[in-house]
Image 1: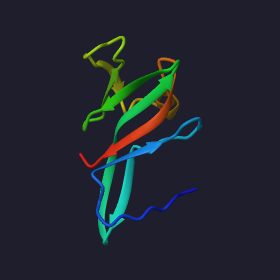
Image 2: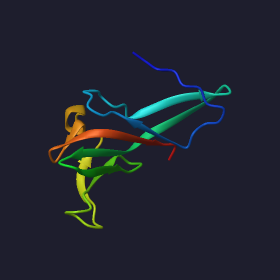
Image 3: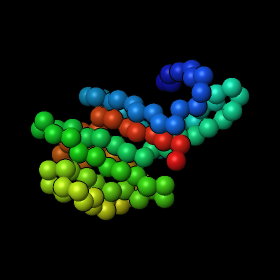
Image 4: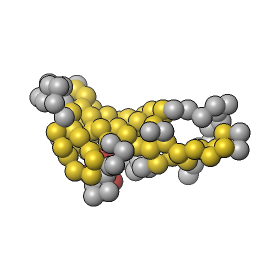
Length: 106
């Protein structure tokens, strides 16, 4: 099941919302704008639970970093690699549910 969205210019960043869904997120989104192909890569995931947001930040090399402003403050904690993490592991983090996926060209 796919959805087609049209753009006049290639977006540098796309944020997709997945509230209350049991969906697998793609690690890459491919788009074609004016016959020019482009890829956006999963660079972040936002989680929500207990009236609180947390996140995972994903580097270009696929390294994952966990952040919780209340617990870790300004520090991110190493949390594995995208390659080694299953979709099930990406859907939940520290008891919070996946609600947003952030994709970027870089």
